Image (tube, rainbow, N blue to C red; front, side, top):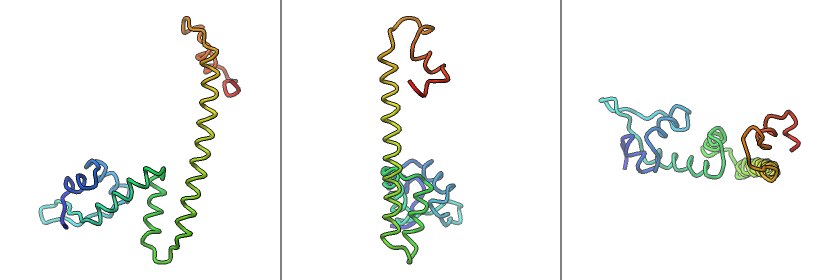
Length: 137
């Protein structure tokens, strides 16, 4: 089915109309042709492209990285190894974020353990956040 209007496209792709417009502004979706009335007309390819974008986002890829993946997808010289390299880089990025989150959790756990309740002016958590040495909690 061709010639979908923006609302139909959004519904089929399971996104909001604002998401479609945002992807257009970011260049993730090519500018669609317009009817004489000025309405944008989308295709099933646009539905598939938005679904690709959403699945890539679910795996943690940024919109910039997704733009690169979309470029690789249409480049006839692209190999699977090119795409695999991007996925491996994303895995490393996720691992770094997980290490940082573990560190944050450890620091917060220590702060919570130090908390004795009482007025906020005496709160060990607030004091630690005010302290210049709070990185070493």
